[in-house]
Image 1 (tube, rainbow over the protein chains, first blue to last red):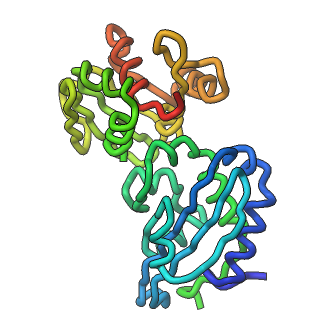
Image 2 (cartoon, each protein chain N blue to C red; image 1 turned 135 degrees about the vertical axis):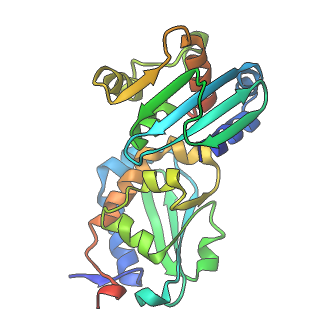
Length: 140
Length: 124
C-alpha cells in the first residue's frame, strides 16, 4: 500500500528496505555518519513546508530514519538539499542521484571524499527509496 | 563538485598536495550522460575550474557520471600507480576497453593521467 511521501510511515518502510538490502549492507560497511535529507517546500506542488529526513546509518545498516523539521536534518554530518520535486524525480528514477549531485541539482554538504568513497552505497540507498510505493502530494 | 573533491583531498592528504603542487596540465572531464563538462586547469598548486571544455587541453576524459565517480574510487598502489586489478579497477578498465570511457590525449600524457588519478582518488 502506498504511503504519504516523507511521512513517518514512509520513513519506516524506507528503513526496512535499506535493512533488507544485501548490496547496501556490503557497500556501506564502515559508514558511521548521519545523513540528513532536506526536502525544500514547494507550495505550488502541494508541499507547503520543508521537511527533514534524519538517517542514522551505521556500518551497513539503518539504525533509525526519522522525518522531522528541516533544521534537524541540517545538523547531520552529511546534508543533501533539494526541492520536493527533485527528490520526487530521484525516488521515481527520473533523476540519478549521482548525476544530480554532479550537476548541482542536489546540493551536498559534508566531506566529499568520504561520500564519493561510498558512491555504491548511496546509489543503492536511492534504489531503496524507489522500492517504497509513495502517494505524492502533487498527484492528489 | 569535482573541484570541491580535489580541494578536500589536497587539504587533507599531504601526498596529494605534493602531486597538486607539481602538476601543470589542462584536463577536461566530460560527463556523457548529462552532456556537461568541466576543464580543470592545474597550475602548480593552483586550480582553475572552467565550466565546459576549454581549448588546449592535455587530456580529456569522457565517461558517464557513474564511471567518473568510479575513477575517484581507484586505489593507488605501488609506485603511485592506480590499481586496475581489484573490483573498481577492473570495472574502469572494462569501460575503457568497451569504449564507454574515452581518454583523449593519453599518448604522451600517461604520467599526467596517473597524477590526476592520484589527486582525485579517495580510496588510497
